[in-house]
Structure formats: structure tokens, C-alpha cells
Image (cartoon, rainbow, N blue to C red; front, side, top):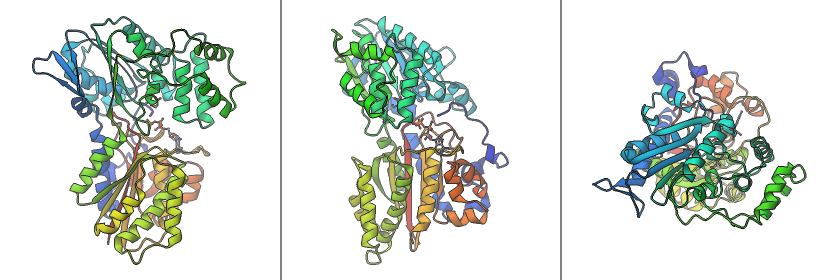
Length: 523
Ligand SMILES: Nc1ncnc2c1ncn2[C@@H]1O[C@H](COP(=O)(O)OP(=O)(O)OP(=O)(O)O)[C@@H](O)[C@H]1O
Ligand SMILES: O=C(O)[C@H](O)CO
């Protein structure tokens, strides 16, 4: 998520209302009513994981304001409350926390992306901004999600605050995605540049976020429970907005308040897997060699309460509820969609075909081959929570409009130098897939959007498509295959019907991966 949000370049001529869903002409186009519902449901998903409501749900003060309740735990408040935070959504989380607990807050320090305050101001999101005389000091850094010297300064200030706490104090830690890059504190003699280089190399070779953060933890003073250790003997409560599939607290932002269960062997394994063992800087070898013989052993976190306060699951549950209100049979397929965007697109294309056939009539169903192929594709993703059979069964019984919801974070192997994001590329690819399969008398619409409101380095959050997409594109002389070959989905959608298929929300101030919505409505 780049922190700045500029004018929407492909739509500068359009009035504000039509920026969202296009011109009146486009509005009449096929699928426009479904598109309006898709936008509403996407917004309700994002709304459920806004910092304010999330923190109000997670925290409560007793009537005399002396006890803070978090889940089933109570903490005494007596001018002993401190706050630190790091992550893309932490500015709004800190503002909401100060709003709720300001009278008890002694001091706070947060590390947030460069330019985020200005972007929130431009977007008119006052609720995401701290008040003028806030007790929370803000550091902006980690441009392009890479740790830099500004983030390092923030991390050292956070460390100092934590180390100064006593057993009477309570430290609230606000954590969200992007927290790893915003809290760099390499163990000497490893330098910031060396750590940055290693994480960049691992990411470029396809390391997963779990692998990347295992390495980050091994080389950091604050990750893998280091921050909790620094705050000891104060009590620590971490409020975590998850941007990782399955909400693993030890992985999100590299688990600064969760004892690391990894050892040096795990790190060597990862380095071997990506052919990086021999290229390691001497400093990294030194730190890894020291780690297992550290007499203090791993960090202990018995004084910590880690709480997930927002996640993709929560966001989809709200969208599901709203879809039912709009009259859809709404079903959540998975909150763990991962895998190459091409395969994910193929899956959704085939799902529309198979589910669509079941919706209109079980006898005019799809071929055995199509059904088998759909299950084969699903099995390849190895999704822990996929409910394909249940969903297909429910669709067959639905007899009316259906909305299938999923969440996660597919990956794009970048080959071209075009402008796009994984949501727009997924939508474009699904548009192509939808045309490949005869769908029968069913209206279909697919939307993919990033819940942070910014898809890759573009101003859009995502896009929506209908099966007529290839025909619409051809009518405007747009060759979909060429745009896809250059990873140029944003340019494509800007040109298609004057940008009517792009989803614009502006920066949302939250981040729980992506949301995918597939609508099927018998004609
Ligand atoms: N031209 C492009 N076409 C398609 N995808 C792209 C393009 N350029 C970048 N991306 C994808 O965008 C993603 C990076 O953008 P973004 O900052 O939104 O994601 P992120 O860093 O994973 O953040 P978040 O998890 O907060 O969404 C990467 O997955 C990258 O592959
Ligand atoms: O910061 C990070 O480590 C990633 O966003 C995952 O939480």
C-alpha cells in the first residue's frame, strides 16, 4: 500500500458519484444492479474492520473508569497506560484507542507508513487522525513497505519506551499488516541494509510470509517476542488486526509479543531452500551462530495477552449478513484463498459455471469432467477451510440469487511492466474465464477488492467483471491478452467503459487482505 492517494487519473472528467460505478450509460449495462450490490457488500466488509468499531468491541472500561476489560481479562488503570503500535492500519487504531482511553494514556509511540497522515487528511478521514495535542508520537517511514532509517528510529523509540516500564504499567501494543517493515531493529552486527537485502532476496525468490518472518525474527531484537521481553515486567496487551491467512499471531508483523518457536535449524532450512546460505553476510552468520547458545533462551511472554481484533473472517461475515439482507443466499467459501492468480481465476470461472448450472436446474447440470476439474483445482490450493461441497449443495437448493464470498491473498508473478494489482488482474482473468464456459440463463458478476482500498501501486481497490467483458473490450478495441501479458490490468480497466468497472474506495484505514464476491442470479 503506497501511502499517498492522488487524483484518479483515468477518471478526472467524471463527476464524483459516477467515479464509483461509472456513467449513467454504463450503469444501464448488464450486471449494473449486481455491481451496486457488490459495491455495498464490499463496503460493509471493510466497515466491519474499521479501527473504531473494532477497538470498541475489543476494549471496555468499567463505569468508574478504573478497570480496562479486554476479553475476559481486567487490568487496573491508574495513570499507568502506555501505547505503542506499528502497521499500515495503526494510525486509525491509535486514534480510536486514544478516543476511548485518552484520560489514562501517559505516552504513546507509533510507526506508520510514510505519507499516511496527509493521505487520510486528503481523504477527509478525520476519525483516522490523532487529535492536535495527542500524547502519541507518530513516526512515518518504511516507504514501499521496506524498512528504512525512519522506521529504525521509530523502532528504537518504541524499544526505549518499553524498556522504561515497570510492573505497575500496562502496555497496549497495536499491530497490523506491514508491521514487520515498520519495526526494524536488527541484532548487531547485522545492519539495516543487510536485513533489508536478505528479506528482499527471499521475497523475490518466492518465500512465503511465514518463511520471511521466521528469518526476520531470528535477526531482530523486537520481533519474535522481543518487544514483550523489553516491556517486562509491565503487563502487555496486543490488539492485532490480521493480514495473514489463518490469523497466526506469531506471523503477523513477525510476532513481536509472541515467543518464537523457531530455532536456527529452521532458518538454515529456509536459506538452503532459496539458495541463499552461501551468500549470507558474515554478520548474519554470526547472529545465527549465537542464537541457539544464548543462555537467556527464547523470549518468554507469560505477561502478554494477544488478541485478534479484526480479520478477513470478520469482514466476510458482515458482508454475508448484508447479502442476506439484500435477498441473496450468501455463503462463505473460504477465507484462505491463496495461489497463483491464474489458477484462482480458473477456479472462479469454473465455479460460476458449476454453481450456475446447479442454481437453475440440477438436471441441466455441468459435465462430470467440469465438476471433477473444479474439485481438482480446489484441491491444488490446499485451503484449510474451503467449503466447496457444502456451498454447491446450498446453491442447488437456493432457487434464487446467490452470493458466494471468499477472502485471502492470491499472488501475481509479475512479468510485464504495466500498472495493476492482484485484485484487478484476478478480476480481468475471471472475466476471460467466465466467457470460456457457457453459463446458461444466469446473470453473473465477480468482484475482487483489496480491503486497504489500494490494489498494488494503483488508486483503485479492485474491479468487477461480467461474462460479457471480452465482448465489451473488443467493442472498444482493447485486447485483453495483451494487457494481461504486461500485467497492465489498471490501464485496461481505465479504458474499459471509461473506468466504470473499477472499484474506488480511497484508503480505508484497515487491511485484512482481499475480498472476492461472486454473484449468480437466475434470469
Ligand atoms: N502491475 C501489476 N499487476 C498485478 N499485480 C501487481 C502489479 N504490481 C504489483 N502487483 C502486486 O501488488 C502487490 C503489492 O501491492 P500492495 O502494496 O497492495 O500489496 P501488499 O504489499 O501485499 O499489501 P497489502 O497486504 O496491504 O495489500 C503484490 O502482490 C504485487 O504482486
Ligand atoms: O508485516 C508483516 O509481517 C506482514 O504484513 C504480515 O503481517
